[in-house]
Image 1: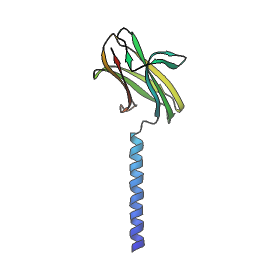
Image 2: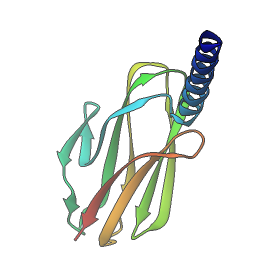
Image 3: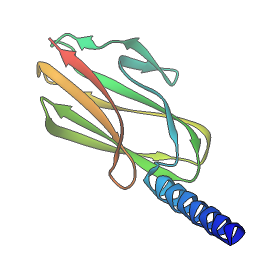
Image 4: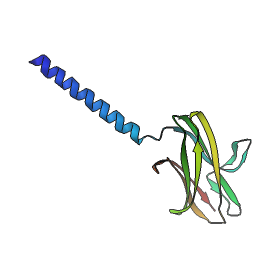
Length: 135
């Protein structure tokens, strides 16, 4: 009787682990973010002039994104927000593989204040974000 009860408990635990593992995988984006930065420019596929504060006379800024361990071809959206209001969305491809670098640019038109760039996976879930300010 004790052996059967023990086996039944082990079976329930195994099912619980399998179910929680499956739901965790469904919520994962299928890649990891190794870099997410805002910069003045991109040179030779690398961000230059990294900053968290930009001057209002700057015409545009770049958000550089590097993903690792991409399980399958997918896409991400870089969503630019100013003072909490969505201003622009750029959809970018990610190819399956060990590493993928990409970027998007945004004209800031002298809009001072707090900016944020959210990374959203193919299902629209927020998987990362970076913030900067324009003064």
